[in-house]
Image (cartoon, rainbow, N blue to C red; front, side, top):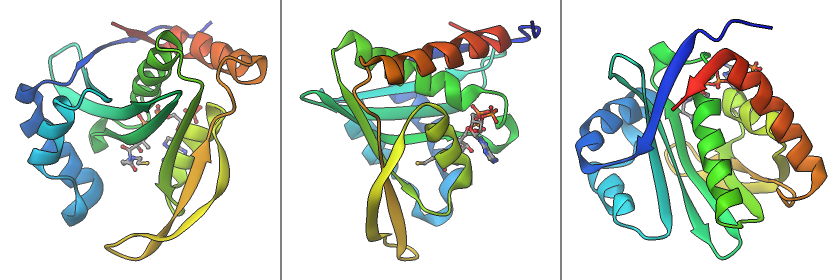
Length: 177
Ligand SMILES: CC(C)(COP(=O)(O)OP(=O)(O)OC[C@H]1O[C@@H](n2cnc3c(N)ncnc32)[C@H](O)[C@@H]1OP(=O)(O)O)[C@@H](O)C(=O)NCCC(=O)NCCS
């Protein structure tokens, strides 16, 4: 068994987090990042669920968000600060989003991702998202296509068994509070 070497803290995103979130946005998306107002709107959007991830020393290392619409969730964003990537933090945030879906009886989860974004596509694929086509020229800054990814029904064994196995491995590596 691997050593559990790290604790991360996941909280609902608050207005106090937004300046730090914007810094990570800039580093992740350059000049086509979301505005501060977009995040402030999301915090007050009753369909939205937005979370931050802090390290034990209190540093904001990432955030993620989604919308819950009827029995579907739409992941709108997930980003980890460059110096904290590949430490399972993206998975920790995705876990929070998926666990919320189970609690709120959401059956399907979807998202769009740039076709060139191998890191994110691998992350989602690991959790059982599969591609259901593309949206052509979806990203206006460079006309890049978006891959549309969906889960199957997350209450079905195929998704759930894979999810439970991945989370078992994740929780051997990090503690999520
Ligand atoms: C995508 C992103 C959130 C992943 O966060 P992370 O904390 O580095 O990812 P994790 O350490 O939790 O990795 C989980 C899985 O993602 C995949 N992955 C993550 N980074 C990867 C990379 N650079 N190359 C290939 N696969 C990668 C792997 O499948 C990995 O599983 P593994 O550790 O078993 O190999 C991060 O790269 C990021 O912030 N990117 C910029 C913002 C962005 O593109 N967001 C997605 C928008 S849709």
